[in-house]
Image (cartoon, rainbow, N blue to C red):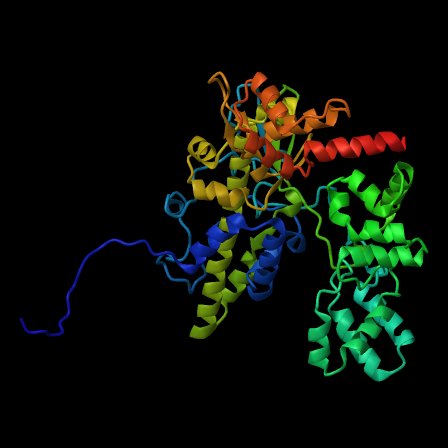
Length: 521
């Protein structure tokens, strides 16, 4: 059969995701800090977007979400704008079903999910504030006549470790070549204060003898903070002990055998250091008073506090009140006045196309932000409903939970729940928790009854070890026996894994440590 080129028309179905729909899905997994940065970028490049604080006044909750149609806008729907059917698609892993239109969702003892909806006639009520990403009209403290002064602008910044060492180097090394070597070494010191580069490689890169580099390093190790510039923990501790004039042969032997100290091999250390029990206890106490990370006292960069996305508090009827944190919700609207003004003005085709695109993007963003807020509230409400015992009784009553259970209960896809619970935090009467914390593995019951949460079992192991004394230190096998007596079917290796995840040493090491503390007391 001869080969030839020809045109063939075929009909088929495929899912096409526009860049805007892809971004709408990504919005779900953004943390509040990432979302704030994204919104700031959109405000800079889209003149149709405006902050509600800048606009002033109370606005209807549906004002920003309604698309605007200026005179030059085409009547055809924008294919890039998300529709309700797009949000409801399992493939997109989102859900467009209506949720309670109030920020607070009351959970009574029966966990009734029904709540009053917001109607255009009555407008938003105080309980509605904060749910919509486009209807927030002020801060939690109420209206303000003006911006408060930024007190943080008057606080002096702490010097970084790098700057602090550079200042000392300028005074300690007048020779320019030595200063250049010192600059290279200081640049290789990490935030903890340790030198991570190899001396021989540094000398080869600078084309200078290794002895000269080691001489400059020795000078840097005399700088403040004490112990900076060390290449390992033993050298860091040795530098601090030398400055305190406590680096005698016995202490030198103890520092050289830090792995034995970590394992609580006190009889072996006592023999190597040639000291008695009392001297060894004093030496160990001195080691513990030293700083293993001398650089951590200096500013290493901005620390972002964890801000909760959802707040849970006890309700008057014995249930739980779940609400979104309005402080982290983007407060945006579409500037209708500006859009109408531009729509009436005479503009060329390029300007009309730009304004039309900005309007479509602004409408999409406000709708996507509101949908994101509703989805977070819906998932959080279901988590609180299924983990009611945890909020009432504590971590020992945490239930096994997976993404599928939440997804089936609220009619969403598992991947949507996964995105919503990523990098989101919930403030509760029992503390601040990441939403992922409430999803734990299941451990079977010994009698075949209700399964136990892995987190609650880990908590039980921690309590058992905290209650033990020097005469009754529990081995992993003993812990397994007690857990099985409490109707928890668990293997010894699982207990060891949970114990190590809690950074709890083995029974032998705990016994040695308790005996040493008993002798010291």
